[in-house]
Image 1 (cartoon, one colour):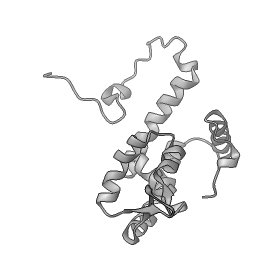
Image 2: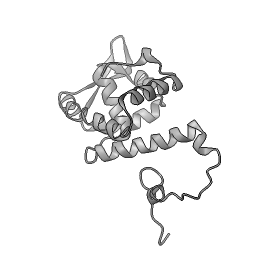
Image 3: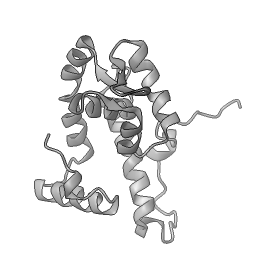
Length: 170
């Protein structure tokens, strides 16, 4: 439609920048799910800003981290670790395999199962990109002290049922 602006990557476009102070949100800003949604959207936008020009989505970063840390990880294990449907994972993987960043390998003993590993150029690319996630986290959590950041991560792991046993070393 003429005169309408398209929504930005956060789904809100310019609207997110011009929130009305007199708008009655009712219980929304007391609902953890509502606040998590807005935090998620902000995280997506920060990721896009930090990784601008890198042709990489947050899901693809997750795939690269999992494959880097678990050479030969299966498609099913990646999908489970990311809490996404295998078809969503397939969509995220296509550009990574097409660019040669990831290689598909068969699983020993079961040639029907697909697993992944970083190619030599993929590993080199990921080693260059990986430090950028720290900048994205710092921007997202700007204004929070270190102990608040740790508390937030601890609480989110419990809420998401990804308790401390699932935490890996960076």
